[in-house]
Length: 505
Image (cartoon, rainbow, N blue to C red):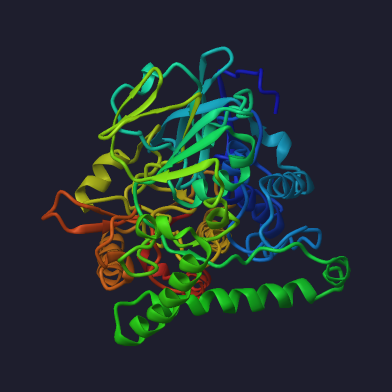
């Protein structure tokens, strides 16, 4: 779609906000199942790909094996590594999008500011702003999908004076490739999954790198390796990729054994914890053990598979510190003990979590999304995708869709497949409506939060999975799925139709 065009009003049966893995899965499945290509995608960036276009920081790569971090209906025998780099993942998405003729249906450099349900028309109306011209126009659709991602909004650093620093300062997801790191003093703030990829990738080119850690993480031995040539040929044999995917799926699902707060799961976690602790102690410098090795349950936070991070801590160019940051100044960062001078500051402090569709207002039949979620105590969705009072609306990889042990792409496929099954009875009706019943939503949400409270995510550490609610201060987890992906697949294939009101007019 021409990104320069700004129609005053347009219509498509389907509209999707975002062009990442979930969105492209939707477009491809819609074509595969129903031979329906009546869809428009709205993307704030200049190209497709979502997080795999936005994140281009050094060392950016997947932390889930590629055979599982891909669509089941589009296996790729050309992965170069177990954990492919960002460039390969983006190329894979672009290839799938082109194969299903989705790319021409994408409106780039456009921001959806508001979506409102027009009950008289049985349609959603999107208020879309074209970034280049700052022009606002409307787009109507029968079915609306939000695929804006779970980790999309950088977290505020929360440090006074961030605007006063005289050099380049940027979040990892907004990497400035014009910022020269060669022979520079660099500060990296954060030590989660992203920082663990950035630090070993840049430390050698810097004059000195200071990493300011703000928390601890369990770091496990690496699982990455390049694929030998003979294996890449073997992958092309029909059925081999499917078999390999199934084996990797079983290995990943086995890790779910460690998530419940039961004695059997505790035994499993203790084995994994001992393995991680041995690895961290044998690989990281002894002087940093106290800053790195956690005292909480393994799995409470997202685990990190080492990609050279712990070895990089031996570099004479690198210093690890957990000093508290007081403020940023033109020269660098002032801590309680000293001034750390810097030419460049990289913020690897993560994203805002437990919130969804933050930069867009979604107005249903009686309330907007924020009001709806306030009634429950936090972000939620029936089967991770649907909400009562919001007809013909689905969130892909929505609340509680994330997994702590396996591929999010499986969850994305399950959510797409579920939504397209639900709307099938009204697909041929221009005014057909599917709407979730309130009671079904309440029962589902109460059950999932109850089950989440019995998992390792609720075992006491401070993580992006859980936040306290305003209702009694209880922990609310809007991120994690407490069951297996086989469970989610079953729920998505065998829908509980009595939970829905379906009107095919």
